[in-house]
Image 1 (tube, rainbow, N blue to C red):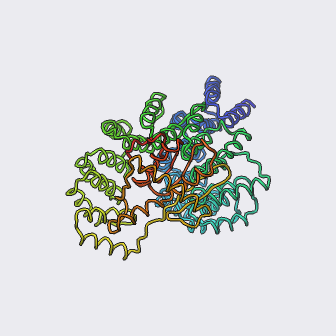
Image 2: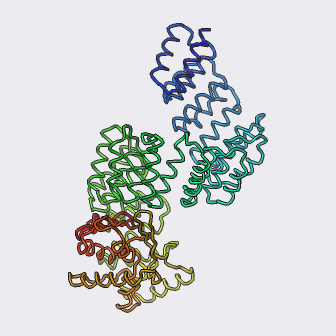
Image 3: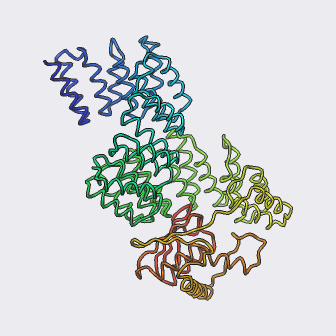
Amino acid sequence: MLISHYLHQLKLCARRQTPSSVKNLHAQLIKAGIDSWEPLPNTLVDVYGKCGLVQDAFQLFDEMSQRDHVSWASILTAHNQANLPRRTLSMFIAMFAVDGLQPDHFVFASLVKACACLGDVRLGKQVHGRFMSSSFCRDNVVKSSLVDMYAKCGLPDDAYAVFCSITMKNSASWTAMISGYARSGRKTEAVGLFEKTPLRNLFTWTSLISGLVQSGNGVDAFYLFIEMRREGIDIVDPLVLSSIVGACANLAVLELGKQVHGLVISLGYDSCLYISNALVDMYAKCSDILNAKEIFGKMQQRDVVSWTSIIVGAAQHGQAEEALALYEDMVAAGVKPNEVTFVGLLYACSHVGLVNRGRALFKSMIKYYGISPSLQHYTCFVDLLSRSGHLDEAESVINSIPFELDEAIWAALLTSCKNRGNTQMAIRIANRLLSSKLEDPSSFILLSNVYAGACMWENVSKVRKLMSGMEVKKKPGYSSIEFGKESQVFYAGETSHAMRDEIFSLLKELDEEMRRRGYVPDTSSVLHDMEQQEKERQLFWHSERLALAYGLLKAVPGTVIRIMKNLRVCGDCHSVLKFISSIVKREIVVRDANRYHHFKEGTCSCNDFW
């Protein structure tokens, strides 16, 4: 009777996740002298794990005189729940080496989940093989875990093969398979399977919607979310809301994001940590950094994602000093930065030229936090050095990188060599870039212009032949603008818009005023083999200018004009937007492929360092 009472109390602790209560109960058990009575030790390990006290769980597990399959399943699950999948896998070896036990279906499920968390499909296949040769090979729970593992590792066909072998498919196996197809971009198979599922509940809807958002099909995800709402599905779990907020961020649709935020508040999920994190990220990516800061400031609880989202947001909006100050606050609050945090910090330093601070951060990332630099970290660091004129040091850093380089890092250095007028180094770097596997059309144009600037016409011809041989076409530039429920997309050179004449007339009028104020077109981003007049004509019809003119004609006077562009803003358009912000006395916010530009009173938040 006494043991039943304590088991009931421990289950309540696990459900409510109250660490202090489980410690008090454990102390009472020790005092009563029944802490080693079965099944209390295993239950305590399980409850400690569910309450986030993985060290306490391990200490108790380590002190157990006799451990069985339940003990091992409990401690492995505890480490998975604590996001320590490597520890889960390393501990497993001792199960048969020390305790002489073979894994059962519960242990297999824990091992598969650890492989899924790590994205380690090679190890996952080894566990799969061992499972198939065991007496538990027909267990449907382990098979559902395998479906999830293969799906998360980007192998939906392998996942489907296991899915078909499950005799009694449960909700977990259906959602894992639907999610696997959706995340791999196989929308037709995902929707087809979703329509066959015997139970269309919130979790199957979430798996489909979240998977589509992750694979870049945000618009389809929105339509499905609206359909889900029409079907009256009760949102008892907010995960689907975080996915839809993420879709708003990816699509940069601020007004729609605000509507979703309103739904979050009405459903009472605005205090949920990962929803708040998603909202901070969404507002920052939708160019409304003020709202992002407001939500961050109101958060009662903040984790590394919260801090990183606002730091990266501030950095991308040109607020480098604020991003660095937030980092200091983050460290002071005892939150350990991660890899993404340092990408944001190096990016912040790169776009305002804080070389010494960037060097210090790069070193501290390795020395104090044990983070090995990724290619993205190196690219940001090289970009910082080369933009600031430290070209030799940047090249030295590139030569020290221990893994294969991509064209982006060479292009970053080459761009700076070109901008700095270091022709000799530019030619050397151009030759190295030319010998790499080129895919980005802008790299070909950069190479062509560098060689043309050095009068190396044979190399120009070689680049052009490569371009034609690979059928390289520059991605068409487009810009979108929205206000209220209206959204418009403009492509570079577009002349078929219904308001073409009004847009052309306004741009012509602004062009004349800019030239009176000293504007001279910068044609360096256009291929060299064009007449000057044709180069200027191309620049005149760039998509962000068309979107801006439309916004000035249609938006409420005095409101901020927000534009999203799929490519990097060229140097000439950057100058034009500064001039126009001064002429029309309006704030213009542009999100391009690299960052956010806040144009106001003739200046930009990037300080022309982008």
